[in-house]
Image (cartoon, rainbow, N blue to C red):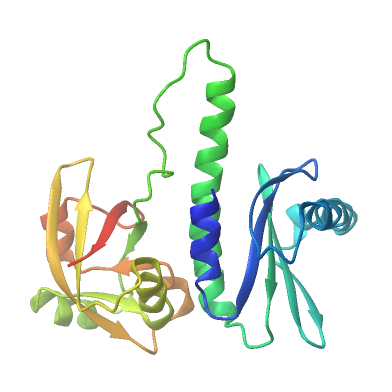
Length: 228
């Protein structure tokens, strides 16, 4: 869990992060030693009261508490809450992608832990807590644009998604290795970064029909993403 939190901290502007349980317990944290366990416990309980009072899990995707010197962000999800301390220079669009992917990993890990707790013998996790980056594949609505980069054997990502992948692997990239583990297909593709891409494509890899056939995937399927 701490490794995922440390990855969240790698986003520019994030000073520290923690994972709280729905009961206000501190499950994991990645803060400096200046913030002790007692302070985090108090923050967890106050966050719990705040999210329950505002019904965040039902109405808000992200709570952004803004102060003179920074932000406190809270993202509630089934099984827990992410708590972040950020500077005023945080890029919320990039951070949102990071948090969405982190939440998916935490949900799988917490589900696995709950499953193991109810089993007489330990079982090996097959969820997304294995450190692999998985993203949805998507298709552009504009078929002509899609066909143009598909003809070149390229895939496309939005600028925020490109930055997220670079942050995840701590290195820039020009090619991506996409793997459909279910079908056993894989391919290495040059990447086109589309700066004007609609926000609906953030957090996904956009491919054309030719690459869909090669990887044996459809829109909405997940693929493992590595840097080529």
